[in-house]
Image (cartoon, rainbow over all chains, first blue to last red; front, side):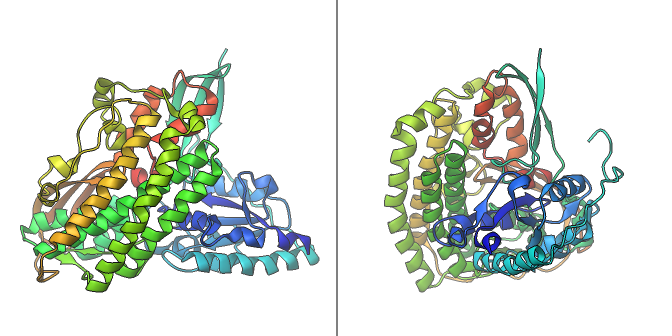
Length: 156
Length: 358
């Protein structure tokens, strides 16, 4: 049970317009205070349990996303926050946009909305906790995402 | 011998991905190479597939922090293209929502900045006060982040008596709260020790580097589009440009704190002068020709260029955002600074990468 009492999250900004990011930070500040669930925003993927992705994926940050996902130790849960991270949102037809985060890495829970309210984000994180606990019991490991190296030009 | 240290794209201090390759000698930076493109979506091409009314909503999603002002600037540019006069009440409502937008953006920046130099309780204090502004914006426009207040021809929501009352009430509680955090930012020994004399730019250098907004005004240049452009309302409301002479991180912080008071004054004046009447005029037809519009965003001057070709879709939309103008100042001020000061110097221009790369 210890894992779900204090999950640490890492925030990955892919292609976001900042809207979801500031709402995610607002979750951690006094009014919404997600720390009462033991939540802590942490800078390094090596210490994180929940990966929160905001914004759609583009060709330049594909490998950043894969790299961070691979570095998080098992069991891990990926939470897509906002319309863009879920499906690509309003930007899904842009030429530089690959799509939602689930095109690249396995996503466990989605929070809809443009932008979702902090209450909705906290609700999504709490939903992710039971998934995290189940993964721990069943010893389910995240699939390693291969870096193909084709997505990004070599000089980028 | 120099070493290259990558700063970003994933970094605890940055809420957004920007990569800087820092060339360091011992602990001192000798060279900087920025790498952009992690947030590029291609919005300027995307507008070719949407008509000019739909583009308003795309422009608002360029940036989630200054979204209202992006929408307002775009709609003003298209109105210039159509050559329509919008009702005076709509213009005042735009100013009020735009200044509320600036209030929350500056308080947000003050909080992130405090977090950047390790003053966590001050960060929480700032963000607690910011929620008051958000509550008002949510009551007026229906959404916390993307406000969608402006449309081509006017505004979408009227300011009723109830909204005006809650706005004035919020301003009355916010002003002493800002005085509280101002005391810490301006007088605190630790804060001053970190900020005074850091990343100094002279008046001439800031002007020649083409910086914008508080970065420019913190170096003693009294340039603010609210005073210099053709948006007359600000002159009627008694707007005064906030300038500081220091040119360092401390001066830029002081400019932003003074702008908070200025915004509160502007909102109060705009509410007291709010005229009665319609909130929108119907705009029909297809735009032709080209127009340029400038407004002052929280981070500086934003320039919109629109070109119509006689269809409902715009032929070209070009945006020059303030952070794009401010990134060269980073390359000038970072060399010579210590590695530990890099997060503060990067944050001091209030970088908005999603604006810059679109």
